[in-house]
Length: 160
Ligand SMILES: CC(C)(COP(=O)(O)OP(=O)(O)OC[C@H]1O[C@@H](n2cnc3c(N)ncnc32)[C@H](O)[C@@H]1OP(=O)(O)O)[C@@H](O)C(=O)NCCC(=O)NCCS
View 1 (cartoon, helix red, strand yellow):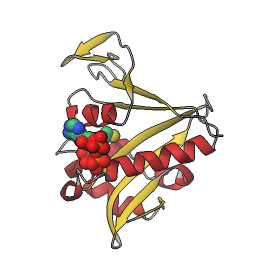
View 2 (cartoon, rainbow, N blue to C red):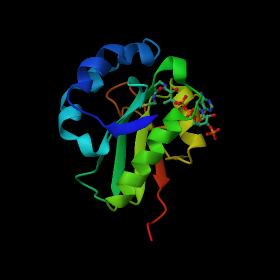
View 3 (cartoon, rainbow, N blue to C red):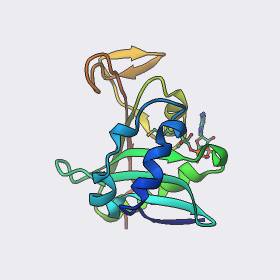
């Protein structure tokens, strides 16, 4: 098991499988090549025996430097529930903390209950919204008209 920075070439392997990894939802358009080119120091690939097992795309906020933001995180369907998603997030927490971040944020769609449960297990809290979907607070219209999103935040332990 190895975690390495994401590389531009990874786009060609990851982009075609994203919709399948997201259960058939058409989300690949939300992850253009630019993320693989310009966010390499805070984005990672997880490999097992050279094969891609998961990836995380994140960055340090330009507007709020104390905030790290995770835009995409996916684990190959056949290797889920083995702790790989947690491993990727914990690596990001460590890198973000080293950059001076004290908080990590992420969002997800309320239909993605598995992602919500996963984030809660990792210690994220749900930020208050202006609506509710499926019992979860959402920010209505966050992703555009009729596109509510669940917003997460996690405080990072400060580095000694
Ligand atoms: C969400 C996802 C990344 C989780 O990856 P994973 O490798 O299966 O998760 P892990 O095995 O590391 O699980 C970490 C913790 O979350 C919990 N968890 C994971 N999925 C869960 C679910 N559906 N329901 C409840 N808990 C869940 C695990 O039990 C584990 O808890 P523990 O460490 O306290 O025992 C993976 O399911 C995925 O790629 N889904 C599709 C893409 C997606 O929705 N990404 C997130 C939004 S960007």
